[in-house]
Image (cartoon, rainbow, N blue to C red; front, side, top):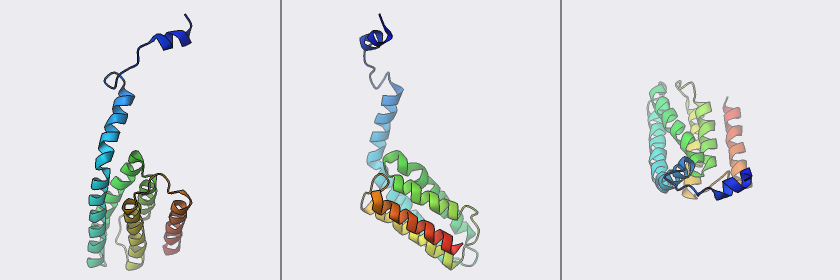
Length: 148
């Protein structure tokens, strides 16, 4: 019996026996709730931005909160098919990584990122967003570079 024949003779694994299939099923079940979770995260990000503006010039605590929320968004987006969420949140996390007090000009760049994240979810743009999505990412990167 060859390896190919023995592999064909093996019974198919059920989700219970196949850890990869079980993980895929779990992700599929969780993905149904992703849009609810991420909308809550986006509300928290928007609230942190409002708080950052309200506590100028020493808004580092609000920026710290915003970083945590965006870090969660970054980690979850691609897992649920929303790669743009991961890419935009990664850009924002990199921008505020030092979590220092942030002046209004930089808050405008942060707001552009949050607005972009909201747009992706509002329109349920999956994957990398195609040409338009990549254009948006490029525009955000330009904002970051110009504000530096």
